Amino acid sequence: MDFRNEGISTDLISSFLSAILTFADEAFAEEIQHIKFSNRRILFEFSDQVLFILAVGDESASDSQIKKIFDQIAKKFNEQFHSALEHFNGNVEQFEIFSEYLTKLVKKEPLSVKILQALDFKENFKKVEEYFNKKFVKLQRRMAELDSFFKKKIVKK
Image (cartoon, rainbow, N blue to C red; front, side):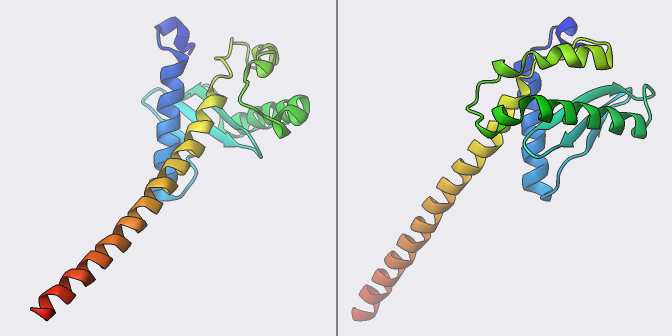
């Protein structure tokens, strides 16, 4: 299914998938493998530096066929963009030419590689979480100091 034909923005898809991935990681400390809807599945394949996402009709391919396609995509992508991935700076435009390969492989026009930007969300979320954890620890320490202070004042009276 081409979501662009349905009027769904790739930003909305990226945000949705990023939120699902973050939720699965935070709530269950596990990688998500797929999301199953009534007539289709969204499958996730994690490679060293890239997350590949494939939406398929429920009966369109067997798990082994899908695994084979994922492996082909990951291998080709990593071969073609190995050096770009090592020095990735957030610019996903350099990966747009990969759409030509995907079109030939799956015989459909793939969505933009924009989803790669969503992976930064997960890293940013962890940074925000670390920031608030540090603030929480400082707050707990301050509360303990205040508690000690008030206990000393009460004892002196």
